[in-house]
Length: 297
Ligand SMILES: [Cu+2]
Image (cartoon, rainbow, N blue to C red; front, side):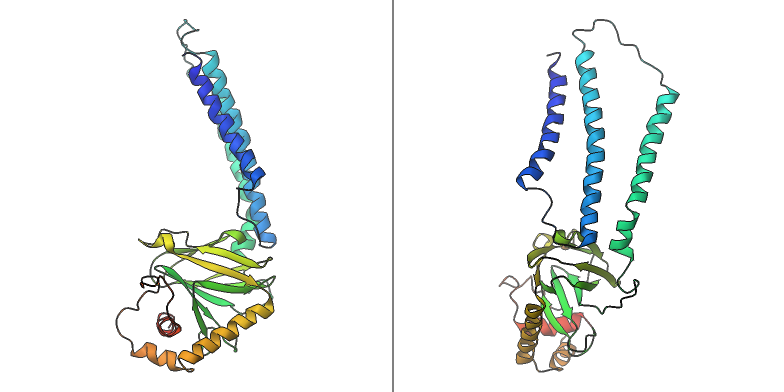
């Protein structure tokens, strides 16, 4: 039994490191990255920190194994002697981690600024909001500016849970919450931002590959959090414009321009949640438009 525990500890190390090598090798690792430069620098930081902590992990685990193996009770009859500490060692294991953390803090600053601080508006090229995303128990409500390109006007277009964006173009989202904290997460674009009640938070990204991706909510927001998942559709500019035109036609067919606002104003009581409906979210355009216009007031 003497050497058993040391070997067990060694197995944990081998298994842990093995999984980190096996995962990327068979492709069960990070979700496919379809973002632009910032998304790649986030991946770079992730891998850099993983390697750094991996080296420390292997070092400490191998040391632990050696001491368990070398000084097990059965083969060492001499009683153990305890040291009362070493100032030099203590200073070392304080300074080394502190310096490492300081280095990481400085090393990631540029990526953080690109992802969270340098809004497209601040960096000179003033782009309009592409869409307003409102988190709401338990769905993502979307409001696109109509032909005037301005959010909050009568020609706005509404949809639920299916966000369309043109490929290769900068997308600027105005993120809101209608009730509690949600988190707007685009795993394939390495974007994650809390939606905070009472705040409008700008979120920006550029999707570089056409396809359909998930928009999960990454903040426990209530009983239905597990099903709060939208789709991000990245498509060509032509397909994107066709989607907006179809959305407009669908909206006008149900309620002529301006009617959605009136319907909304005449409504009373709580707006029914699309997710809570028996058909599982496939609300008709009329219901959607009317309730969206109300919540987006
Ligand atoms: Cu949630």
